[in-house]
Length: 98
Image 1 (cartoon, rainbow, N blue to C red):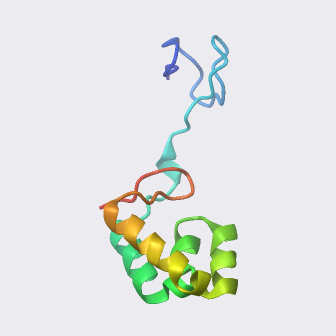
Image 2: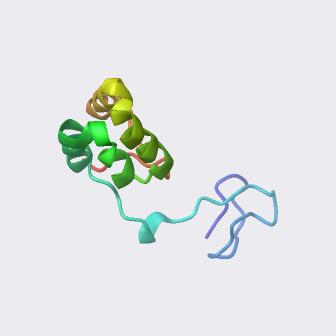
C-alpha cells in the first residue's frame, strides 16, 4: 500500500505513514455500506424516533432524536431533506450507496 500524501510505500496495516506522519485512510472492506433508500425510508417512517441515525452509525444523535421525538419533527425533516439531496453521510463519513 502507498501513502496518499507522500506516495511512499507503507505497511498494509499501517495507521500512519512513517515517512510523512499523515494518517492513513483505512480500507472500508469490513465496514458495510449503508443504503440511501433504506436510510430515506427509515427517516420517512421512523424519523421522529431517530432510527435512521442508529442505522447510519450516529448512536448519540439517534438517542437524542429518540428522546426529543426528532426535535419535535424538525430534526427529522432536516435529515430527510439532506438524505434526498445527497448531503447525508454515515458516521464514517462515507456517502450512502445508491
